[in-house]
Each structure stands twice: as structure tokens, then as C-alpha cells.
Figure 1 (tube, rainbow, N blue to C red):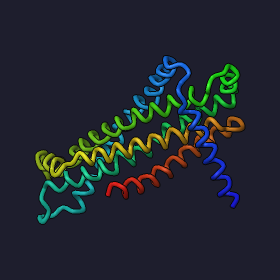
Figure 2 (figure 1 turned 120 degrees about the vertical axis):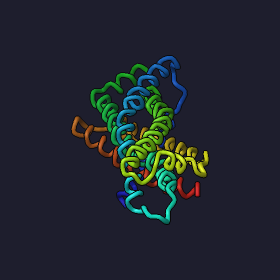
Figure 3 (figure 1 turned 180 degrees about the horizontal axis):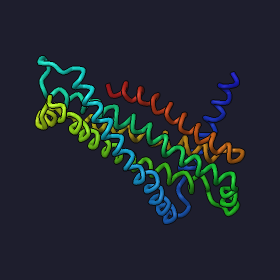
Length: 249
């Protein structure tokens, strides 16, 4: 019962904080400046890790598909087709979101937590600033804008990595792989991936902001809350992954 009570208490505090955060910014110029800064810190600075992981995981997926279903009864385009399904439907929106949860959630939570324990947030509140909107909204908006773009980069990189992994094995050609990717392609797959990416962006950014903004304690607690932000974001990403998958199918 105590755990349930604590969960409901935190859920209520989270909802109230998000209500404050999504209020209209007091100064639109300052908001857009912070938005650009957060887009660079949370989005642009994440491109490299998304590229590297996507290329290698995409290559590994295609290699595993070839090793496990290679045979005369399967047409050569099946490898590209299967890899496209796996990459667009799961790898890009889910696996990459878990990677971004580790990178972005820890950064957001530790940054806000440090501002809390050094009383920077208290100083802003004394000056009459809506700190929830000033500090949290740009981070959430940046994630909502840039995470879908990162998913598109991830999809392209993973499919390219799949081709890099497939060609040296000598089982399929470039044209077989591309034919499989193009076969029965539906824009609904991209919509599905973008919906997942948007939901995951909101989950990661809002949970991390809550954990950092409401931190109590010192430097040790900053590390603890950063860890909680990563763990809780990852759990909710997987929960909503199942829910969205069920709704789209």
C-alpha cells in the first residue's frame, strides 16, 4: 500500500508540474533562444551516436536474417523486406529511444538537479519567473521536434548498414536488397515510427525534467535521480511500445 501511495503522490506531483510547464512562456524571445540551445544539446549532439548504433545494429539484423533463413525456398528480396520491417517498426522508434533515454534523460535530470541544489531555481522564482515553463518547456519542445528527425536518420542509417552487412556475404545483390525494401512499402510504417518517436520523446523529457526539478538533497541525490530518470523512462517506453503496437494492429 505504501508503494501505491508513493506512486500516486508522485503521479499527482508530475501532472501538476507538467501543467505549470506547459503554460505560455513569459518571454517568447527567451523561450526560442533556449529552445535552439536545447535542440543542439539534446538533438544535434545525439546524431553521431544514433548514426553509429543504427549502422551497426542494422548490419547485425540483416546478417542474422541471412544466417537463419538462407535457403532456396526464400526469394532474395525477403532479406531486405524483413530488415525494413524490423528496422522501421522496432529498431528506430524503440531501441534508439532507449539509447536516447540513457543520454538525454541523464543530462536533463542532472542539469535541473544541479540547478535545484545550487538554489538557481529558487533565485529565479524569487525574481517572479515561472521556472517550470522557463526551464522545462524548452527541453520538452526540443525533444518533441528533434526525436522524430533522429528516427528518420536512424532508419536510413540502419537500412544502409544492412546493405553494408549483406553484400560481403555474397547471398544477395544490391538490387535484391533494394527490391525487398521497396516491396509493399506503406507510408503507414513511417507514421507508426513517428508516433512512437513522439510519444517516447515526451516520456523521456518529461520524466527526466520531473526527477531533476523536484530533487531534494545534494550531489549524491543528483546521481540517484538521474538513474531513476533513465530507468523510469525506459520502463514507460516499453509499456507504451506495447500499447501503440496494439492500437496500430
